[in-house]
Length: 277
Image (cartoon, rainbow, N blue to C red; front, side):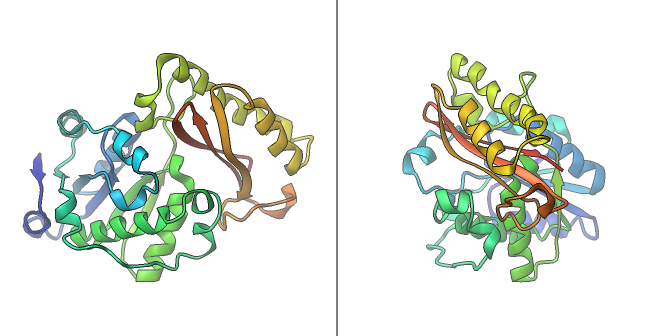
């Protein structure tokens, strides 16, 4: 496995591999089984697996969140090598942003709700870094986890907007034994918070049964009520069309409906989602 820090060296390495099918797994490091499942999927579908490890500053609208974000580069490289990754691209901020990126993306309605509403500028920062990675790697396929359900829709919108020739592969959420969605942020939870955070996925799962005999609004209110306790503070729970990500008011409105949650457990913000149909 090669560990590469510059775009020029990355492109040289990939040039020598042509005409191989190249897959990219973009990450911000602090890797866990969820990331490794993306690597496994990538290696099964591509000749060359490239994983990027880069904590992107432009997608953080909270400086404290950026500073708190876990960084474990040595452990990440060990896990990636064991998982069969071929190239790790681990650039500096200066390498990815030699000058300020002033690009503004018109990503459409999928970027304006939920995370787009509660974290202004977040998805523009995501589009900045993912487009840079796509230009640097020029992958045939790119792999993203469905825990970041809205992010996948935004990246698909960006790919269409910029006419980038890459296939976006969405991969299932990987969960801890407790049901808590795997996330790098989980390492920032105390042991007690981590135990309590398992309630998030349990409530979402139970809401599928509740929804069978109740309206969309009643289901939203029920989920919020179940999580109205310490150490939780709900940012949002929205039930949306699985394609457009716009809120639905009736179960009959769409053939694909997803519930998306963002909730603080102490100071740590967690996201998750559940499919109703």
